[in-house]
Length: 214
Image 1: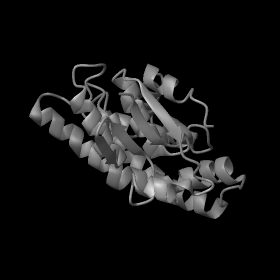
Image 2: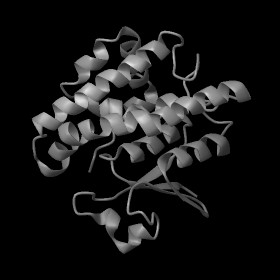
Image 3: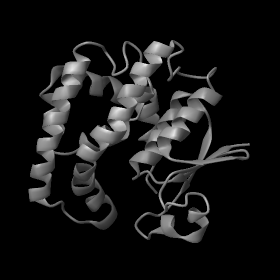
C-alpha cells in the first residue's frame, strides 16, 4: 500500500516528513490540505490529527501525527533503505537526539515567527510581514546561530560526522528562510553556511522542494 501524507507544501512539518521519505527513497502520495481555507480544522482532518494540524500520516493500518515522531518511525521501519538517519551506536544516536530536541524546542520557536512573517503571510494571504516583529525575531536568530556555529565548528553535522534526523528536521525552516533577507545571518557564519549549503544540495531537498505547492 502507498504511504499517504496529508499536508501542505507550505507546512514545515509536512516537509520534514516528505524529506525523510525522500532520504529513505520511499514512494508516497501527498494529499494536499488547503491551509488557507482552514481545511486542517475540518472533521475529516481532525479524525486524522485531533489537534487540527498537518501532517497526518498513513502507512497501511498505521496512522500517525507529529512530524518528528513520523520521521523517526519511517527511519526505523525502513532502516534498510536509503540514508541511515539514526546512528546504530547508542551514544552517537543520543547526541543526534540532543540536537533533534534543540531543533524542536529552541530553534523552531526562535525562528518560526520569522518564517510566518517573511514567508507564510505572503504565500498564503498575500500580506507583507510586520517589520518590527521581523527585527525583533532576527535578534533571536542571531543568538541561536551563534550556538550552532560553535557546534558545527566541531563536526560537519549536528549529531557528528553523519547526516541524521537532527539535520533533516531543520531543513524546511532553513529552506524557506534562504529566500528572505535573513539569509545573510546564516551566510555570516562559515560553518553554519557550509552546513546549510550541504543540506540544501541533497537530492532529497531538490526533489521535495521541486514539488508544486498546489
